[in-house]
Image (cartoon, rainbow, N blue to C red; front, side, top):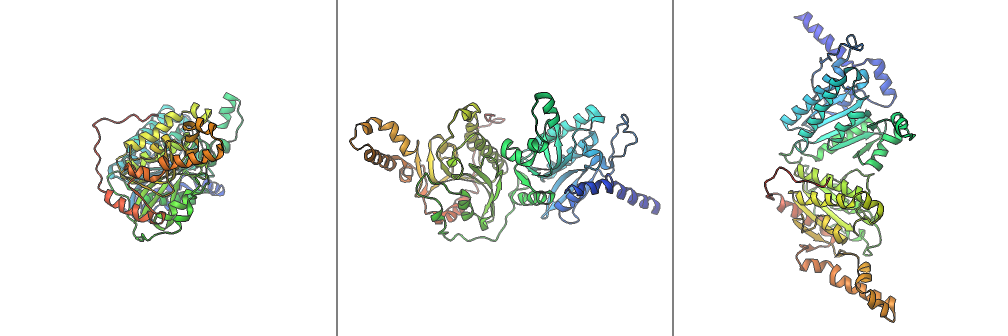
Length: 512
């Protein structure tokens, strides 16, 4: 028995070395951790239980018969983060470039199914050259099983992808099917690389310009968080998980410690009365959530819409807000998609939502129309209308036209609507409305400028005032900004047992 145990320890130690210390040092020289170092830095100390350590590929052709691939290039298992169970997979670039063969992918899919069975989040750390060409169709079959598993887990347990190295070809579709992607600046992700693109289309572009973290954040919107390095990516992952429930049947973690709901006078000073003057809505968010702690999602993509997680009295909420500091807070294609996807996530995992509104409308323009603002704007309407979690609308200032309806109005979604005294709720801004309604009258006036100003104020008093909307019960209460946290906390408390029955059906058809 002693000899057998000694052999076991030797085999375990050799297998855990992966591709060997030389390749590990090369990885570290590039500013990256090894696969097992990432696991150790992500999880609670001594909590990782590995599955499939001794797994091996079964390919015998193309030189694979004698080629060692410890753990088949991926580390899989269960662990805890802040005492809560997760399942994870971490690709090992030091073993065959982290390429995904049949067994490699089956190990990942197995970890995902264990995640589903136990109702625990799944974290996939990607660092791979792509499909293992030597295994041909078996490699593709493994990919397919991972993709199918992603869809099975979707809406049942949170899925987080970390892109810490190359993620090319079909491999990129698994992260795209997860809920959140965290990409480091050392990594690139694309379906076809720069060389193929140049051969096919003649376009010349670098790997970083094509698939770097900043490109995906600013242009494609694929990435949700950008990290400087592996360490920061792992920190973001832990922080993100702290806001999320383990599955769709559990509540998000309760974090006590900030029960103060006293007035915050600073909120009275943030929003200018003049609807044409911009401000940073994140200052409003910080003024109402616990300790000012707000985890913004996709901060660099469609910045005219702000989304993210926070807590009020220890309970997680999702926040959706127009950003007047960018495009005056108007909704464009990217902003609508960004918000709709986030709303769908919050609803799937039973997270109440607070929507802060300061929106002049949908962004006009030929490009917006050609790129589908009708379809994409409808996604926002659909996402809110289909949601059944508690939803609160807070109108800070402008709330015009169809965008007013789309931003969680009482008519499609909101359970409770608050407005600040600065709120203007109307079909459009008073200036534009007067140009349409009173054009002839202004032309006939002796003092056109004075008459225009009178009519603008008359329109505001008649339609744009929050008291008009409150009179029609479209606003529940007009509140002093300083008291916003108190009102939100009370509303969230009485809405926590909300029940919303919907017609029986397989699923609705969001306008994709």
